[in-house]
Length: 149
Image (tube, rainbow, N blue to C red; front, side, top):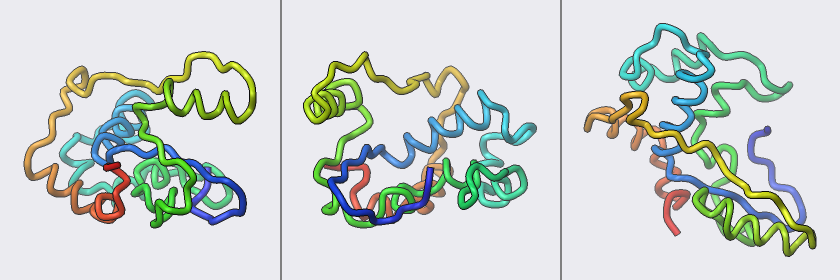
């Protein structure tokens, strides 16, 4: 867990639509792990930076836990997709990513997966206003193409 730092060697990354990533992170870190108790979904969306700062804690010497998880992808993956030999989508974890790693390491891996809980289970449905706030927050990710092929 670290902020983007260009290192030598072959690079791959796994991208995700920024708003889907936000929703998943909110489910995991706020609702399931209870890191921001007593904060409504709308309150979190509209005052995210303030809430994250108030409830955050150190994860590694250089990274705060909530700030990292809710950060735009370009802060983690960088602003140039061309540095990566392969850019995978999160939906390809158990297909293309698994095959790539098995071929590279010449091993057989178990089924790979990510948590995939329904947002509706938690009643998380974005309003147009909330969507606009998140699109603005993650605007650079959308411009770079971390959500599109």
